[in-house]
Image 1: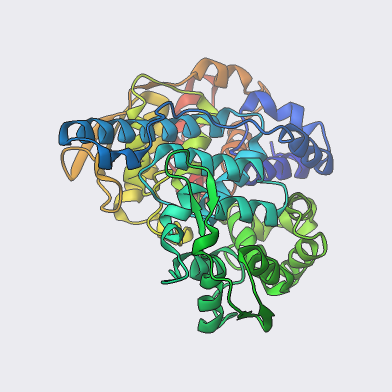
Image 2: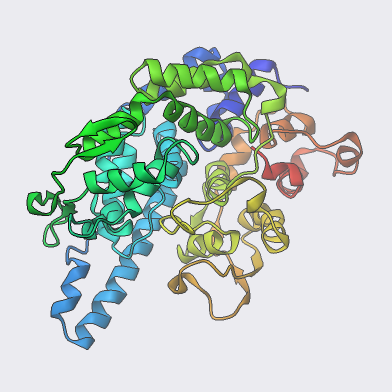
Length: 460
C-alpha cells in the first residue's frame, strides 16, 4: 500500500523541521493540510522554555584564586556539568513538542559554533539560540555577540583600543553574516576597532562595555566613515543584501538540498531581507514552498549524528540505563554537542560518512531496538573526557526501547511497503526490496531492523 502524497509530504516536513514522527502521531498530522501543519509547528514552538541543566555556579575564572587540589576538583565538576548539559539537550531534541524551535536551535548551534570549557556560558548561549531561534536575526546576532561564551571563544575580551583583536570581527563577517569575498581586510580591521571594549564581567558572566577600552576614533567600514561602534557594524552588514543571500544558502543546505537552486535562494533571500531579517517568516516561506516537497529534495540529505540519534529516540523512545551511551554515540559518529571542531562548525554532508562511522550507522538502529553492542573506532577530534579507554571499542548501549508502544501504533492495514515508506525518506531499489524478509505481524521487529540497517535510512 503506497502512502499518499500528503502522507509522504508530512513525513518529509517532520523529518526536516523536526526529528521525525512516532507512528502514534502520524494520523493526527496527516489529517491536516501541509500549510496547517506548518502553522501548528510554529504554534507549538511559540513558547520559549530555556534549558536549565547546569547547576554549578562557580565561575571557571575562579581557578586563579585556588590551590592545585581545588583546581582539579573544579575542573572535574566543570567537565561533569558539560556532560549534564549535553545529555539534557540531547534528550530534549526528540521529546520536546516544540520540535521546530529545537531544530532551529540546532541550526544556530552550528552557525554560531562555539567551544569553551564553561558549561554555564555554553548553556546561556544555547538558550540565546533557542529564545531567538525564530525571531529577529539582528536581535539574535547581538545577543550572541554579547554572550560570555562567544566573547571568550573569539577573544573579544582582549579586544582593546591599544591592541585590537580581529578574531570576532573576522568571524562575524566570514561565518556569521556576509561571507568570504564580500569584505576587505580594511573592513575587518575597522570592525575590530568598533568592537573594542565589548567584554563580560568575570564575576557574573554578564555583558560589560568597557568605555575606557573602546576606540572612539574615526573608522571606515563598507564605505561609511564615522565614530562607528559594534552595533553600527552589525547594522551596516545587515543592510547589505549579500548577508541575506549568505544566510539563505546555509538554511537551504541544512533543510533542503546541498546544491541550492538559484531561484529558490532568491526567494528566501528576498523574504529575509524584506522582512527586516524575520527568521520566522523566512523559515515559513521555505516550509510552505512547493519546491520544498519536490522529489529531488526528499531523502537527499545525510542525517547528522545528532539527527540520526534523535530520530531513533523519537521512533522507539528508548530508556538508557547508562546515559553515557549517548555521549559515546556522539563521539564515535563525529558530532558532540557543544564541542564543534572549530569556529566554522561541522561541515556536514558527505563529511559525516567515513569507513568507521558508516559501520556504526548501519548497526545503530538494530542496536537500539535490540539493546545490542556497537563496535567503533574513536574519533580524534572529540574532547578527551568523552573518550573511552581504547581507540577501538565495543560498547553495549544499555537501552530499553518502548517496542510495545511502537508496535501497537502501527496500523493493522499497513504492509511491508507502507512500513518501509514510514521509516525511510527514500526507497531502495526493487532488487533490495525483493531480498527483504516478507512482512508479517510476527516478523515486524525483524522487518523494522532491516529497514533501519539500509543505507537509505541514513538520509533525511
